[in-house]
Length: 332
Image (cartoon, rainbow, N blue to C red):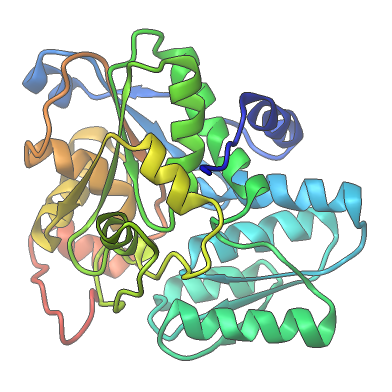
């Protein structure tokens, strides 16, 4: 049976987050609107305090946990942005936080988590390695796990993005959602399909190690090797024991689009040059899919700029046209 994240849970998350985040308004892209002949808007989640949409899910989960079990420390495994968001939310709630990261997480994201006061642990070279350390800390130190995506409170928090999109674009045709473990896609899909069932919700990921896409094709969660990519926030598996996001993405997504590294780089350049926003690879994939014409909107379209936590030197090389894809050396 497909799990359900209802509107009531998403609206409750919206209420909990009211004092934690300032929802960024949608931006109209003049260049993309002109190109496709329909309104194309951007949801700049890169403007949130933690630099990504992840503050919504982490903030809602911490607030809900505080109501149930006040004072307990939290722990998570992350590719960077969720760890930063959880550290931010935990600090605001006065809770200790431990963030377990693999060696593939970029140094700027590791430093940002540490700067927020969280204890950082670098473990192995995959999300699975980091997750094993989380499970040990839950067992040995009694910490409460706040997963990066596969949790009802996290999904409901991410679903508030969908509420805001529908409120701003009543005649919505298409939403482009960065797709990794599926928390954002499941949350946004739940809100959009409940309120605008005819709107299309499309997940966008990199071709290099897209775990949710591989799992949906296999009709079950499958392991996928993590590879260096500009969209590093979209790396990692979905968990072989996935309880929520796999089924929700299967039920709610109308399609999944995969992009090359060059296409992702083009998206980063476009968003900087034409929209005056700095985004990481994961945040650029919706715009990149439009630029590559992997799909064409029939009416008002929203691309979610999911995060802006990119290494400044890497961003500079990309926008100046000096970046080249070097898989053996990593994205930077």
